[in-house]
Every structure is written in structure tokens, then in C-alpha cells.
Image: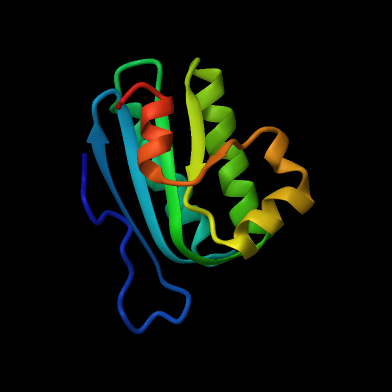
Length: 130
């Protein structure tokens, strides 16, 4: 799996830095920055590409502890990733959401589909990597 794929330059005001690693049967994706119309595609494409390299079924944890903001494009990217994982018989969960991000997920109603864990380690354990 590639580390640092999708990184942006430091002078990008809407930077989203994405890195991933395999932990047991799971893909742990860490995102830092803002998940907006300018960066959502970067996250989506990174996760979908990495997911194709996993043995089935894909089990993906997005550690979003470093995401400070998420707009509707970001939510759409999460939905696309969730649907792709479920179509393949897998899981996509979130971890370490800050209060604002959690509120956005809840108010949009996505909390009915996107399970969130307090920490990445708890999410990994729930998906069988613990």
C-alpha cells in the first residue's frame, strides 16, 4: 500500500493529506486537513485504489481525527467509499471524529450507515485486526 499518496503541497490552503497502511486484514486510512469540494476526490480515489489491492472482503477504517472540516462533497466521498465496500461484502467505518465532524455526520443522517468508533484502534479491533 502506498504511504502519502494523495498528499498536497504545503501551500495548498485546502490541503488534505492522506496516508494508509495495512493492519492485519484491514486498511487504515489517516486523513488530515479539510474534506471539501477541492479535496474529496483525492480521498475517494486514494481509498478506492487501495481497496482494490486488499484481499476480499475489504475492511477499511478512516481515522478522521485530523479532519477539521467536511462539506457535502466530503460526505459524498464517504458515501461512495461506504457503498463500494458494502458492494464487495466489506465494511467501511470511521474513527476519532471530532465533535464538529460527528455533528455533521449525525445531522445528515449518515450515522445510520457510517459507524464511528472513538479510536482507530477500537475500529480496527471491531473489524478483526485486533
